[in-house]
Image (cartoon, rainbow, N blue to C red; front, side):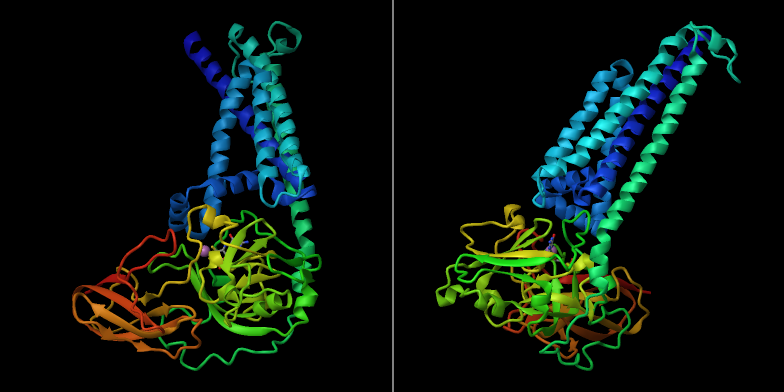
Length: 543
Ligand SMILES: Nc1nc2c(c(=O)[nH]1)N[C@H]1C(S)=C(S)[C@@H](COP(=O)(O)O)O[C@H]1N2
Ligand SMILES: [Mo]
């Protein structure tokens, strides 16, 4: 059956090409990982290409990703990049079967792409950032060239022979015209060696990366937070309702939502960290160490943080007890005056170690609210995910215009002169938090038993406070919910409503009124450009 066997040979020939391509890609990534581990982990090709993709993703798509994959959005992105790479690697492998040099050159092209992404990242430290991509591409190109030649040798021999199953006959060694068995082993051996070498390089890279982060981990573990000069009052009794399934008043650090563009969470060594304050109207520019900040009088406050990407009823909100340096005092020392006092700068641009920029109104930061450079979160140094060693917080503003994590630079400028990261991507320049309320229990499509059902949830309008929450069942009248005490105007407020539930399907709707007397709008808007609005409702069936 020559037809069948030649088909099989073609197939296995193609399979070898595909495998060569995949192994070359694996080698390239592993070697890049190794070099990144030695040079700078954040310059690894997957991280820089992923970062470049994140920055170029249209806002609507980013919103879709956050909505669909939640905090797994970055894992999905990385898997997506790897999947695309795998397809391209197979294609290059097949190409290399016929044109080894062209295939290898293709791999090098990816090295150039990775290098370009690396040096164009906002946190790039210079031309050295191309090293991981270049080294990886060179290794990948070599691997593809060698593997493809091994596969080719066999391809040339195979058509003339119909290899018998089982051990290769001895003649393949002596008969120069047919080295099919030898070359198959040659290809498999080369593939095996490549796999082991690449896996070792990758593992070593991981090890070096972890070791680079060790200084940061140690600096966090040894950090002792000073006691606040102005402690937060004890959380008033009753702010936490005794209702199962309502969000806890204080969100534990481990449960606190995380939203950022960082593919690898920056691990900053507190010992070498610096914060620079400079720009328009700064008469005394200064650079602070962490110890210098910690030596200042600290404040401790309960503040609710919210993301502009939070949908109505969404999870991107949490409250923590933050410890930090009052930011207004620091700015005053630098000579900064708010626009209302004839200050020249109306925008404060905070920049993080990973190059993120966030812009806040100087007026809000200096109007007496508890804007701070936070160092502590619920009694602990900030977790790495939440900005260790220092992040900014401004009560009343969405995170993307105020809550810079891993902050390292504060520049006073104007809204006319500079658009920070999210504003360049069509989000609003100014974004005070919209008055919102959420039903935590019962859950959507829940089946509460007939009789008394406790409906409960949270409402928030940071820096204005919540004065009233109403609940409506189906199209009935609005009923006053019971409000837990308000901790401060900067925190969310729990509410509950006892409902006498009759069997059937019901829609529960909630709306809040803030401290200015403004009722939460019914008008549904998207999250872009300045936060979602509208009433949250939940449909339940009472059996
Ligand atoms: N460096 C940096 N800071 C950042 C962001 C970011 O992407 N990078 N995201 C901001 C956004 S959009 C929000 S909502 C808050 C979220 O803070 P959290 O992750 O601690 O909850 O951080 C803000 N600070
Ligand atoms: Mo956000």
